[in-house]
Image 1: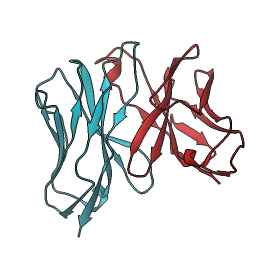
Image 2: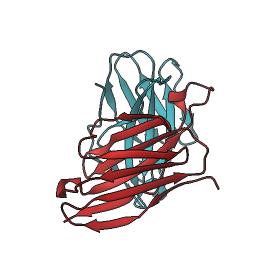
Image 3: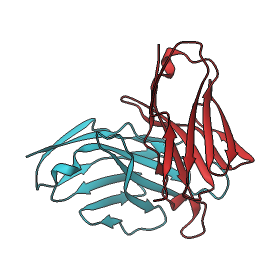
Image 4: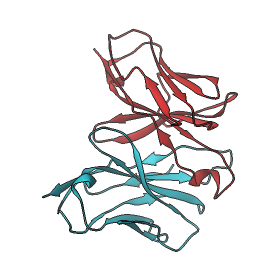
Length: 118
Length: 117
């Protein structure tokens, strides 16, 4: 099955460490996203990418960076992790497509990475 | 900036009954899309139903339907014949009609739905 995968699924790290979360997809979608979920706050957009050369900041990009290594791969980095970056991180993909408009197309989510920064 | 508000942190319903989850949003745009996502304890995000703002007809998907009131900026989810498997967090989300401009979903804070057997 075409899928969205995230590695690692769980990670515990220390303050000040650099960490990378990876996302891969086999759906052939051109758009990819990173979201963060905190208890009681829903999901918030960190970065999104329309294609390999088009990367955009979301609502809460400070303290994060991303890299779109290929159409199928989109990684999120925390250059110097801090405790308030402890959260559940989701990658998602979407197809621009033509039917119904790009905005109507479903975003497919990966299983999430639970990150704890001590 | 767009905002999405879910005013019910938690709802409880008896199995087989009907429940309605509320969602309001704020936007100055005229073309956009609205979604309801379900997040069970497995934490997987699952699309339940979606609505195009330019369509007046309310979307339906089996036991799930929406009441979309564009002027009131309201997008409620009705679950009929509630089942134990419906127990989850439900998130309302907004998305612009993205033709290459801003993209991404704006989520509400969620409603925790409990199904009483």
